[in-house]
Image 1: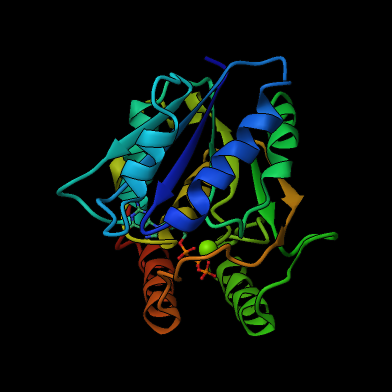
Image 2 (image 1 turned 180 degrees about the horizontal axis):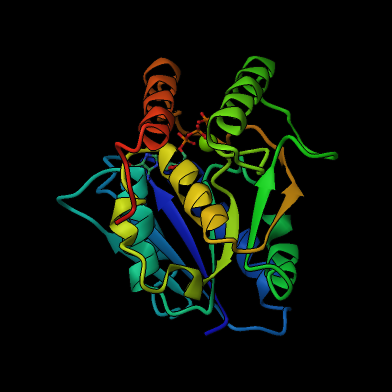
Length: 237
Ligand SMILES: Nc1nc2c(ncn2[C@@H]2O[C@H](COP(=O)(O)OP(=O)(O)OP(=O)(O)O)[C@@H](O)[C@H]2O)c(=O)[nH]1
Ligand SMILES: [Mg+2]
């Protein structure tokens, strides 16, 4: 298997099948094999069942249901562990992350081990909220000065990587919490000197459903995660 796409969902019934269809149409004409793994945390709106029903009998679409565990980062890790692709893409399922970048992400990771989408390189941006765009930008500057990270968008969560970059790493020490897991992921990858390229992305409006991000509490969590890394209170091993 060349590529696994991991789609974490929580109450995304409105958008998920449209997203899968769009990804499917993009990828079926590409010269590589792929699977799409949906990891749903028992959404009350029936996201899992909507996917399972629509794609029944199609082995390329694999909906997974987590009945007991909850949380974005552990859902993503669960998907990665169930996946078989040599390359892995992780993205949001509400169309914030435009699927048209997927072929580019796959091709460019022939040359770089990780390709991470950024709103803060030339060509990037956010059609959604100016307030969040600027707030995230300031936070990313803080991450840069505190942890010496070179990546400009440490909160995007839209990325592609070669599976082997996680070999021998206790990934559960990275993949916990919410969007802060992505700061830990990029931090570890940069410390390990893996080649990373940033690709410009423009965030689109969420298609249906409701946001799961509580800005105030998440910002506090992100801030705390960065400080913990800086003070050595969080270590990979
Ligand atoms: N499996 C799983 N997925 C989650 C969980 N929380 C969020 N997600 C998914 O993670 C992605 C990001 O969540 P969003 O609510 O879109 O967060 P956001 O992009 O910061 O907020 P918006 O700007 O409103 O879109 C979406 O695909 C969600 O369905 C969770 O606890 N479990
Ligand atoms: Mg979103």
